[in-house]
Length: 93
Image (tube, rainbow, N blue to C red):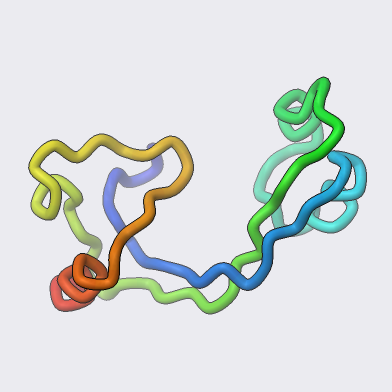
């Protein structure tokens, strides 16, 4: 857990799909992980997916999740947020 705060948001530009080998060729320069970790993660898989990140917004002031969600537990990788909640987040940023 690097910071434990909501520090920004991003739009999904594209969802990439392919064999782990093909995905590595497309994403390795931007993935943020070492090849050994990547290969272990996809071990035994014939297909994988990657999210291509589009527009990014970094908040001026990070948000403490427990202030928004009383019973907040960090998601494993991402969390879907509805439009109304997103507006509330933006007013806090």
